[in-house]
Structure formats: structure tokens, C-alpha cells
Image (cartoon, rainbow, N blue to C red; front, side):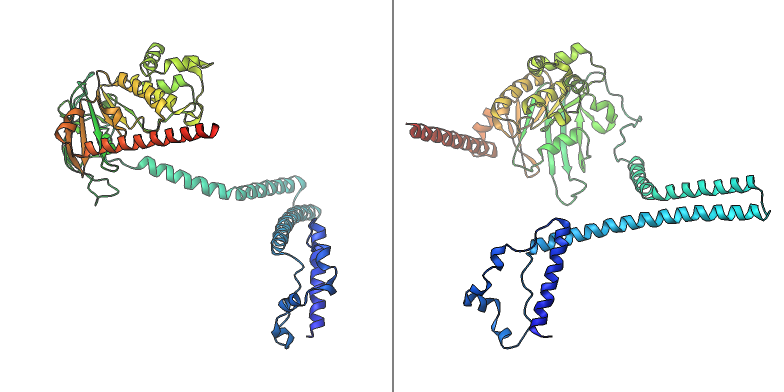
Length: 448
């Protein structure tokens, strides 16, 4: 094929693409300036567009670049879309022709039977209508087949969840009755523990802790040392590999799980609020709580003031996950929910770590009131929040490394883990203050 015929063929392809683009309302031809004055091109540019091997007769000349790649992709997308639309329309037409054809053929055959006396008119019509209704029903059923399959899969997953047996039976009645009131003393004795999903990683090795009734036990330590795991063991989300968890001197496994959990309240790091009113979110902690008890719990949690300032008060909807409230407000509602339970044991799992300084101060005041007179086990990241704890336990390498009050730890373990954590947080705080003051002074100099 000669070079001229190749060029003519490429021009025809370009013209066909242009016609297609005109049908779709697209502009694919290059700007007029790119095609005008073709005789005034730079010879060096011509040499780059036509490599030497083409001049020597080797190779095939590339097609003229009349359509840019993005526009080509857009054309292909439009073409496929039109093809799918055509296929859908053709499918509908064929189905309609088939159904109408079957209907017409059935009527013709029925009339033929009546005409030749093989059947009377009433019987023929009855049979014909039964066949048509059955066919339509079968067709509708077939269209719903994918939904039936999806529904069956969903039902199987639900029943698998319902039929699954838990290792810890919450409704076990063969247990020791839980008293109406507990002293609230919590003790972990010689605990070894690994998570079921990670049995090779030992979380605790001979861990022993004791929270005296009505006192505050704070848990500190490096990240991943198992502070939150202590909270999970007390709630009996997991069973220890060895050792015992005691409440008022009795093994927690001897108590009914649901009954013992009524005496335990928890304030998590991220409060879980439901998309309903503030009143109902607080009442979730105790189903039988009266309005007076809910207001009292909100007052102790330092939440009553801001709730009363809202236009709808306790009837204010908080939105999904409490999106209508600030972090401090959500946390105080979570504290009120815990307080309305009137539980003897309070678990605080880094309840202020995700708050800013102002919110932390107000929430910490609420927590101090909430913990008064209750056995409190506090997981803390910011050490300033647990300075007044009766006992501070430092967990490291799966066991208690240091234990005592704030002053006792600093005095007896001056180079210990707790002292280093205090120094590190003081250094970080000093750096932040220095950076803030430095930026403020620079702003003043710039203003001057």
C-alpha cells in the first residue's frame, strides 16, 4: 500500500470520528490554527514528525494526530454507553415480542379448538387464563430470584450469629446470687492473659492488683502495656489464662454475668450516643430511672447547666453518635449515663484523652464528683488527671512495675517509669508553651 493511500485512509477515519463526535455534541477536531499554514512548518519539526527510517522507506507512517487521547477515551465511553442502551432496548423488544406472540398464538389455538368442536368456549378461556396468569407469575418470580438469593444469604448469616455459643454464658442461673449492694472491692490475683486472636503474645504475666472499696486506682504505663485489658477482664469480656478476678473477695466467674454488670459502670474514651434525645441517652444507663434521678445524675456530671441552656433542654436530639454536641458535652452525658446506674464500681478508660484543655477541665471536675465514694479504676494517659488517686499502678512488661501514691512513686522511684513519664510530659508541655509564646511574640513584632 502506497503512502498516499495510507494518508487517504487515515483522513477517512478522521472524518468518520468527526461525524460521530458531531452526533454526540463533542468537539474532536483540532483548532483551526493547528491545520492552517501547513506549508510554513519548521523543517526541524517536520524531521521530528517523520523519522529517518520513514524517509528511507522503512516502517509505516503513523496516523495523523487529529484526536487527542482523552477525547478518544470519551468517545469510547459514549460508544459503550450507547451500545448498552441499545442492548437493553433490544432485550425489552424481544421480550415484548415473545410475550405478545405467545398470547396471540394461544388465542389462535383456542379459537381453532372451538372451531373444530374439540373444546367449548368457556373451558378454553378458563385454561387460557390460567396459563397466562401462571406464566406472568413465573416471570415475576424469576425477576425476583436475585433478591431471594441475597435474602437467603442474609438470613443464613443472621442465624449463624444467633446459633453461635459464647464461651461465657450471660444467663447462667447456676451461679451465686449477687447482693443488692456491693462494697466494690476489686482484686486481680496472679493473672496471666493472652487475647484469643493472639495467643502467642502474652499481655499479663502474674499480674496482681487491688482496688480498695471506695478508693481510686489509676493505671498508667506505656502504650500497649495492657491498661485497657484490665478493664476488659473486670467486665468479663475475656477470661484470664490463669489467676482470678475477685469482687468483694469472690471469684467473678461465680456471679451471674448480667447481674454483676449491673454493679459496674464505664465511661469509655469515645462515648457512644444514640440518635435520640439527651434524656433517653442518659436513661439508657438505667431503664427504670425517674426524671429526678436523671437530672440528679446530669447535675453530678456537670451537664445539667448546658443541657438546660439548650432550646429543648433534655428533649434535644443529639444526632447520630452525638454529632450535634461538642466532645466535652458528649463525655459529660456519658458520665451522667454511668452515674444514673448508681453502680459501686466505676471504670474510666481514658475518658479525657480525646478532649481539649477546656473540655478536659470541666469533664475532670465531673469525674472527680462521679468517683467520690465509689471504687474507681482509671486508665490514664495524661498523668495530671490522676495525681490525686489513692493508688497509682505502673504496668510494664505484663506486670506491675511500680505502685503507690503520686508522692510515694516520685520519692521512692526517682528514676522509675512513672518519674520518667512525668518528666517527659512536663518537657512536652514546656515546649508547647514556648512555641506558643514565641509565635505570639513574633506576631506582636510583625504588628509593630
